[in-house]
Length: 470
Image (tube, rainbow, N blue to C red; front, side, top):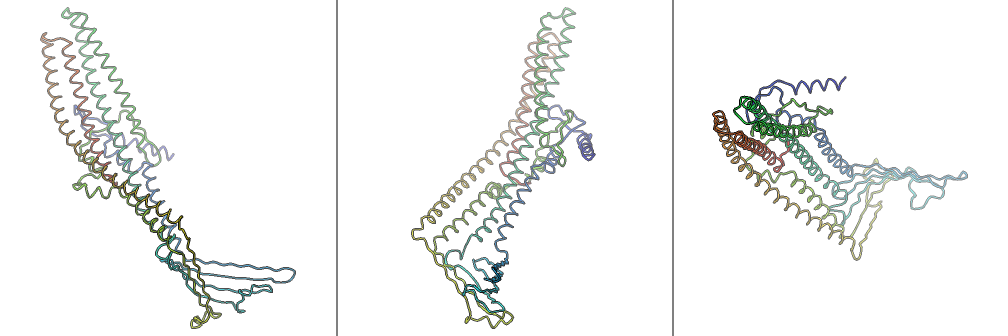
């Protein structure tokens, strides 16, 4: 029942009656889907938009996991052995640890050990032994350690996932817009062929009447019929192209989790360039150099470089000797703070240092190469994006000039066809000439249609090149 209601809503939205202007002959349509409406559906309902949010959640989850390395921790060890009525040992060790940023860890501990065969160094007072102390590393692990590095890299990963999310959305809107313009181009192409098919059909009937009246030779009917059949062939090819374009556009139309298929009587609408810019947030962009620095691809690479830099710092730190220190104040009476003195204590020192450092030096060399590779990739990507943006701007300007020229050419061809029709009516022309003139007009209108679609596509190419996030 819920699915049926959703479909009804979709149909009401798509069949809403509007008055729009067609591309070539300004023919109004009753049923239409504008570019703004279409992109609105894509942004709101397409599954990839929801997948993009999942990418962000993954980054936040990784950051939360890294922060867990600094969570306070409670540890309890209890070990007991009793055999043939003899208690060999009963050991309890409870510890509360608080890790901090610079490899320093504060610790509170309680021990209570008894038993006939207890290790002498585990002997404590009858009420147990309390301790409070600190452990830290002097060289390796002081300024940076695995825990600190994981948190720093997780923060860079958050930036990278946001950039990757923006890239995913940017690519989705780009592909969806291209599909809409392909649909628009195929629809206009079908309309052009349909119009000239009607002309050819009318002309064939007129030729038949002229042949019956004895004004023209019977062979003229054959020529007119061939022209009509060619137009029918072209129209069928254009109709197939439109049906395929509709299916492609339907890939991007969803309502909640339900895919929507566009009916063949629904028509696309030629959008104004400023409407496209508003829908894609391109309006008001003047300084592309500033926008380029925040391009999601570059932001992603910067985050990658940042993560590798953290790794390099960590690897370099491992070249230092490992010196771990621990000092604990001991007392059987934790309620009295003054009993924690240097008289009673437990200390620990651990020192280690590989003689050749081959593993550590190899790790540093490897991370340096990775970092160098990432920097080269970043520089090449930046230049590529800059040149791509410049090329798109030049394409937009060139297509604007070409469109103005082709509009004049179409107007002149229409004048020639009209003049040739008048001459044919007066008996001063032939069917071959008027068909030739009309074919050139068809070619010009098809080229005009292609150039206008290229002009629209160039605008979304700019959106894609700039990496604008929606």
